Amino acid sequence: MVKDPFERVAIFGSGLLMTAFFVAIVVGAFGLGIRVPTCVTDVPPFDQPAVVEVAPGEYVVNMVAQMWLFNPREIRIPAGSRVTFNVVSKDVQHGVMIEGTNINLMAIPGVVNRAQARFDRPGEYLIVCHEYCGVGHHAMFAKLIVEPRAAGSQNPNPARTMASALACWIR
Ligand code: CUA
Picture 1 (cartoon, rainbow, N blue to C red):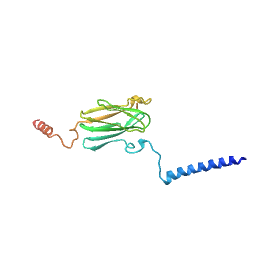
Picture 2: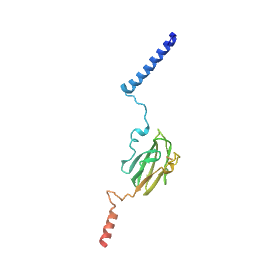
Picture 3: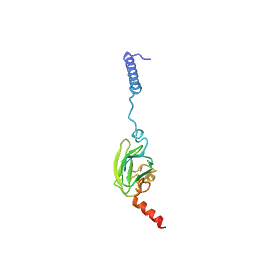
Picture 4: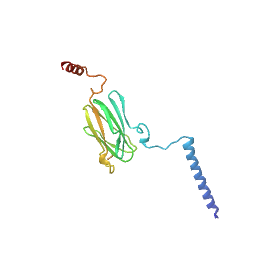
């Protein structure tokens, strides 16, 4: 049983304070709509990692690194494209290195790291994690495929079209 009047004041006082804090949180969250900051991978564009063509020959790759994969896992762009990589991490620190380029980034939780490169030479470029991130580290990779311009192009090279027509005709 509480005997000391000061003890009573202290108990009621702290109870009142706790109630006031609780009311402030409820009013802030539901009345004023205040939200605490979320993880960067939960908000656009990183909630849907993708390759986006922002202009002809100009691409942006919004890439999420996580144990133990990159998303997107495969990036396809036509040769001659300029690509900006925005890299974030969903969990621990990862690395992003693209072979044959000078792209060498860290994927760090809560931070967007950016680099740009131009891809003129068609082929397959390996993207590897080069920061130890756990038991699956060695298997963490993605691919960037640079496709030759003529393939799938809407404007076929007229000289080449003529040459293949001629080759058909001669046969
Ligand atoms: Cu991710 Cu090593």
